[in-house]
Structures are given as C-alpha cells and as structure tokens.
Image 1 (tube, rainbow, N blue to C red):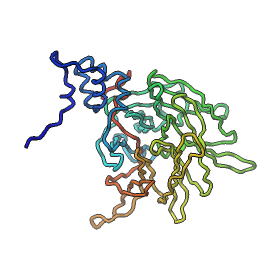
Image 2: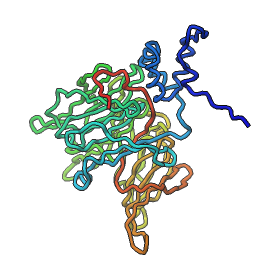
Image 3: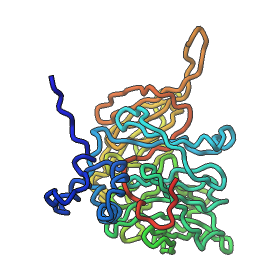
Image 4: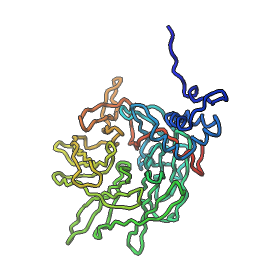
Length: 411
C-alpha cells in the first residue's frame, strides 16, 4: 500500500532552472506569504530576488495578514517582576514560556537574550510578535528593549532627553496607518512643589523619541494619583489604556476617590479620557483595564457576602469610546486572595488561588491552584502546570517584524 508524501515547501518553492516555466512574482509572493517564519528565514538564501521579497517591509506586513497559524493561538508568559521577586528570586530565572492560548499547555521556552540594568525586566506588552521590555526599577534605569523571539533579533531603544525624570508607566502599540511601532512613556518631575507630567513617544521607523502634549486636564483637587498596574496596560482599537486612580480633597477634611481611563491614540498621538460604566451598587476595592476578545474590558473587585471572598465583575465596551456600550459580562465569586492574570486571546480567564494544604505521600504540602474560566459559560478547568508565582502574560505569534530594522542585534 503506497503512501502519498506531502510536498514540502522547499520542494514547491525550489529555485527555477532555465527549463522551468516562469512563475509570476505575484504568485510567488502569495505562496511565500503563507509560509512559517522559520522557512522564510532559510529561503532568504535562495537568491537575491527572494531575499529582496522577504525582507521588504511591505511583504513583512502582508505576511502578518496572510500567514495562517494553528487553530489554537499562543500566549507568552514569564514571572512577573515585583519587589517579592527582587528579594527572593535570582535575575537569571528570566525565561519566557510560550503556551497554548486555550489550554495553557507549555509549547516552548525562550531565554531573554539581553541584560536589563537592574537585572529585572518588565514585560510591557506585545504587538505582532514583538515583545517590549522595560526595566522594573524604572526610576533608576531607562532601558527599553524590543525583541522578536521568532527571528532571534532584539533592539535597545536610544536614551531619551528626559533622563532625569521618574518614569511612571510605559506602553507599547502598533500604528496601523504608518506601519510603525511606538513606545509611550509617561514621566513626572516636581517643579516648585507642583508635579509636572511629561509624555514622550518613540517611533521605530525614525528610531527616535519626541515629546507630545498630554492634553488632558487632571482634576485640580487631586493631590495623589496612581496607575493601576495589576495587568499589562492593554492595546485595543489602536489605543493604549491606563487606569488612573486619584485621591481628591473635597470640602473640609473630606477625601474622595475617583478613577479614570486614560486613552492614547497611537495613530494620531492624542490623549483622551474614556468613560467608566455606572456601577455604584457595590463597594469596589480595586479595578483595572484589560482586553477581552479584542475589546476594551474593565475588571472590578468588590467584597462578597462570605468571609474572605470577593466578587469579580467583568465589563466589556462593545463599541469603542461609547459610554452606553459598556456591558456587564458576568460576576464571578472568587477568593479574596487570588492572582488575577488576565484573559487569553480567546477570552479565557486565568486566575491563581492562594496555596492550599494538599496531602502528597502522607505529607501536607502547600500548592497553588491555577484555573481557566470561560466568563461566558462559567466553565472552569484546572491547568496541569504548576505556577508558583505571579505572571505577566501577552499574546504571541510568529512574525518577521523587526527583521528589516536598523541597529538590531541577532542572538
């Protein structure tokens, strides 16, 4: 019984000889755009024409749109750097793990190839296969890196002119109009006892920073504010988003706590404030912004009825920027002490409960329980891998992005 072998891409796309019929460039590009990154990197050596095709910025963008990944998408995660990690974990444990988007099963691992000044990298975000890292000790160092693991290239961003300012937050997004990647940094300094905030934007195409205006009026009575960084700041609908929580002084000695979502349009480089849903029926402990199936989402945590329990309400903005489009997706009862990791690209929620005593080999051992929850069906599945620390999670995909960039390092 004979078995028909599948034709390999290298056989289909082998170099033509003078006896072959010519294959139009349009057809050749259509085929190449549907091949995996690993194959394309090898095919650059076939001839100068193919090298020119594959390294062309237009082809790199086309490949992002045409290349069909497996049915299951991928996420990339790493231990979330915080002061606990700084105290108890060594910096060399800097491994990025690629996992299945649906099951969180480990697929592969990458070691971070560059060294952050403090030794503790912070995963800012991911766009089209490029990961953005900053230094966790942001007030000390201005290190920012872009890294594409699938082509093994990274780039350290140039220093900014605002090196004396304290960095508050950094965001990473993709400008679809100009096919450019941008990093946004919000910093602050004190001028005559007044906090002044500065914003600068890095453009990969120009490889430079520039200052932009904030354009949003802060509440004049606010004497303190903070960026809620429970989750990575989401990039949704061409905008970066930050949840800002402020403390305002009212009449007399009263204090009022308010919140706002600060939005930055990566294309126009303009800021604006987005409305929050009206939900005053419960006492909210904290809230954060994230993304759910490509839409802006808001997570609110409030106290539940049972001791040591909380309620997690999930809101989704169906029409971007429209107040009335906020829709409460669900309310989940959760333990008071959980690590809320966020959503995968398919809308599956990953949370990690605090360790419980589990009997193993006649001994009691503390183990964490990590589960995937579908917020639409409320189905819950415990994942098999043991996660003993907080995680930073971002979407992951293979791409050629950063392949044609200047001042990049191959590792």
